[in-house]
Structure formats: structure tokens, C-alpha cells
Length: 369
Image (cartoon, rainbow, N blue to C red):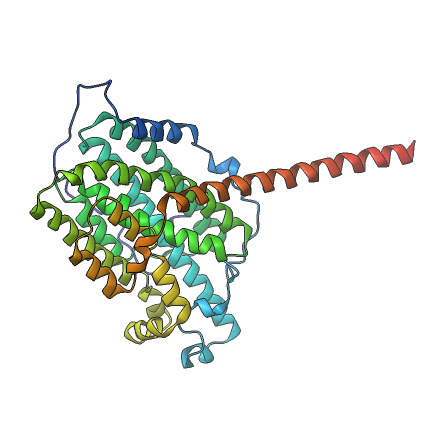
């Protein structure tokens, strides 16, 4: 079945063509490299995995309750719009909400794959080119996973959100080699990583928990890569150059904040998106979710040195300045541990099940003998 058969609204069958910008850079220095970045490259190679075998795709998913989270997570919960819906319609709304979220993950991962390839082309240093090549493979795997989940388990796909598409366009059409890092590794990946984490921690369903935990294990390396690559470079920028990057970050954060409101969902249910914006502002869950989505971006922006009073005011106005105190290394370490613990628990349970089957066969043969 074509993905176009599953979209909630018509999507052009032609490709979205973004003009190439900037130089493709070759380097003839093959021995020089930063130790921490080369160590990350080695880790990127060591941690490659196959989604076909690592993820238990036999797990059932109820498309009308994909995540198993309380209905309070829906912006219209408790309003007159919620009261107007039948139980069947509420189930369909849950399906659309999950589809929209995972569809944006899928589109964002394709953007990340393309951007990683762009970084391989444009970055001047070999160590960064090597790591970006491993990231492109990671992102290809993520596209594969989210595509399969949407097609086989949810059966519904949303087009790319226009705000996400705008940020991807700005990221890819800037000729400066550091901008794909800033747009993708810091902003888009940072927000996606936080969204993955919130859903991973609240879902009661095993398949989405597996998917997000394993994807986050990869994404933790990607954000670390962006920090390492940009931290040194931004120390060398002039005040005017740094201000240009800060402008990009502020605009990008506003685009990301607007993106998460999911206006496309409500349009499909005949609800005025402007009314939903107000409901989002009044929803304790949505306010918490929106705040947590910047838990990875804000400390990362601070870490790479874009931390003027102006950018701090912008984050203060958005209500996320406190996120600058988050310990990124601790968060990334936690992401690794959760994925590894999930593996341990899953495989221990499978081993116990196999042992029980063998014991049952032996017991049956003994009784028969």
C-alpha cells in the first residue's frame, strides 16, 4: 500500500526539492581528529542495530489507544468539544493524535537523514564527516521504524507540519556549514529527543516504548555530536556572527513551539485551530508537555555558547529559561541506560519463557514414560 493512501489530506506525489546551498568540502588531512569526536564515531559504529530483529513487531497495537495515556493529554479534554464526541469518535481522535505525533517524527527523521548527509558534504573536518556518516545510517533506520509503525500499527499518516518544513527549509538552504548542525542537531533533534522522552516515560504500551527508547539511544549521540562540533567553532565567531546564530535559534524555537499544537488534527475534527490554541494554553498537561520539549534545547544552546541576555530573555518569555539548569550529560546517560535495561528485561523474559517451554516438554515426557 502506498503511503499516499494513508495520508489524512492529499500530499503531492512529486518530491519536495530544496536547492543546494554552500560548498562541498574535501579535506586531505586523514590523520588529525578530536579524540572525543573520534570516540563518538567509534561508539556510533559499535551501536548500530537492526530494527527488524531488535524490536518486537509482533506486539499488538490498538490504533484507537496507541499510547495508553489518559485522555487529559488531549487539548480538548473537559471542554464542550470533548462532551460532543461519542466514545467511537474519541477513539478516532486518539488515533489521529498519535498518528500526527509519529508522522512528524517520521518526517523529521527523514529531514535528519538528509541533513546528516549534507553535513558529510559541507563540514571541513574529517572526524565530523566520519561521525555524520554513522548518523545518516541511524536516521535511515529511524525513518524505517516510524514508517512501519504508522503503516502497520496505526494505519493513518499526517503530512509534514508546515512549521517543521519551514525550519528544515531554513536549515538546508543556508550556505554556512554550521547551520545544518544548529538547525538539526540542536533544534529539531533536541526537540524530538525531548518529545520522545516524554512519550517513552508515560506510555503504557510496550511497542511504542521500545521504539522510542531505542531511537533515543541513537539520538543522544547525535545531540552530543552537535555540541562537540559547535562549541569550539562558536568561540571564534564575531559578535555579529554570533547574533545571527542567535536570531536563527530564537526563530526556530518559536516555529517548534507552534508546531507542537497539532492544528491539523483539530481541523480534521471541525474545530477552529484558534480555539484549540487557547485550550492548549489552558491545559495543564499541554503546558507541562510544551515546557518539557525544551529541556534538551535550552541547555544545549547554552553549552555551545549562544547565551546572550537577548536569547535568555527570549527563553524567559517562552517560560523555559529554567531548563538551562538541566544536566545534558546526565539526561543522555539516562537515555542509554533505559534502552539497555529494556533489552535486559525483554531478553530475560524471553529466556524464562523458553526455559518454561522446555521444562513443560520434559515434564510431559517424564509423565508419559
